[in-house]
Length: 189
Image (cartoon, rainbow, N blue to C red):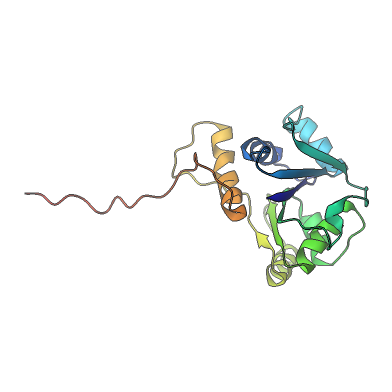
């Protein structure tokens, strides 16, 4: 699978870090784009973003990258975390950076675009932008962790969101917690 992973300046670098760690870069072609603000937030939240070997990094203003053209065949793009400012720019069709242009291309080409906003609460403007993107075909996957798996660390909490992203991409994620139906019990004799 050919993937574009991007991050913007919203809090939540841990989601990006955990996603990059769980994608098999030997089996998938992974391109990474970080906005300037994403780099600043990453420095505050995780000190050093660890980018696995095999991931190709691109500058946010480099419009010479293949995934900003509809003729380049890429399978999916994930923006994690996605600020509401970026989400709004994508909803309005703004495409003045590689990150925004790529999102625009993925929408117009009907390719999978997954946006992972972490911001809360939402304003009415945020909600309308989300609706616009849903209508355009994007997947909006808010960074809302689940607790069925009883995560015991911050990383384990973040992984509950990362597992949902991997599921949306159709990538294997064998460590993901899966819901079981415990209502069927063995009848008593």
